[in-house]
Image (cartoon, rainbow, N blue to C red; front, side, top):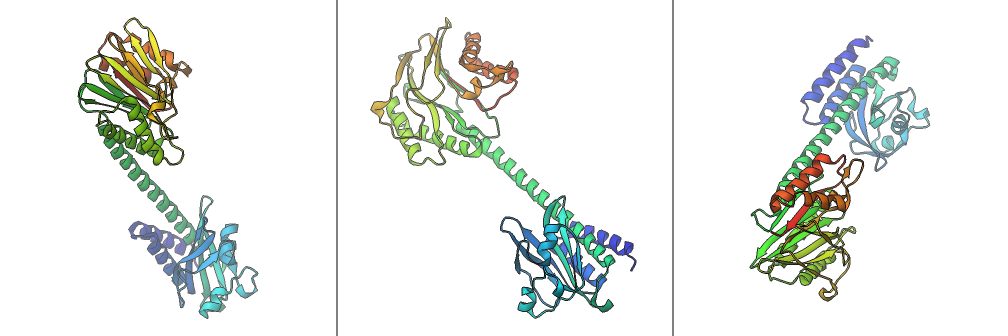
Length: 407
């Protein structure tokens, strides 16, 4: 037979089929039908490999018996050996071949005499195999030219399946990107939206969504605030962050003292903790009348009190992070701090671990930056520090979050 013409024809037909077909199975079936007609084969089939399940399943079939859905263990039969060896096989007498799997013939009554089996592989990624069985003319025997034509179909099918996988991955990635974008917009709305003269925070996510949180809300003459950092990263951390945010808002409504609020938030997070996730946090309240702040540090970076003379006082962690174990309010240590001439700052480790000039900034560098802008208003001071870190850092490995409280 003139091999070049059928090969070019099948390439042309398969390109058109894969471009226009609603699904890959329909396109492959078109290819099977064409090759079966060209080679005068009695039957043709396509088997798909499931590497995870270690099975090979007939996905498309043309001929006197329908074996779609028939499952062969990975590596078994002529199909399995073809996929494993990644080499087209032409068997003139299947009954004499040691790899021949007789189960299908036994169950269907069909007699497999001769066969061409070609691997469907793209760049060492095995997808399955294509079979042509029993040539009707030429004494029922296939030729080397026939095997070459089946290989062309197998290669076209492999390319189509690889492109289909890539397209699916790209679509899923785009959907995930869109979901993360929407989640980020929702998360932004969780942060305080109304300006406040004595409280301001800023969050810059490392990725699309953040595992950090800050919040403040005025209840009467008090400003309740929370600064937190969820263990882990990504979407899971963002979900825990959102839950912590909601707990803070709802549990501060009855105007609890700082220890009670911290214990209540911890109890709720501990009861529903999963995968070992926890939240480091600084929780507190600021009195607009007395200009005093009461705060509790639950496993978080030390809070910083910075006065106008650059005198620094730190609020170290005095209890475990939230979500690990039950804690009674009476066991919590809450500091009372005079902010008549000072401001209080809480920040995530994204600031202290940012690399500037080849080394981590550390708490000292963050404090120095805050002092450099101490003469500015609170909002400008916080924004300047975040902007400086973003500009100066050689590497930022985590979310950047900074919360300030005070006049």
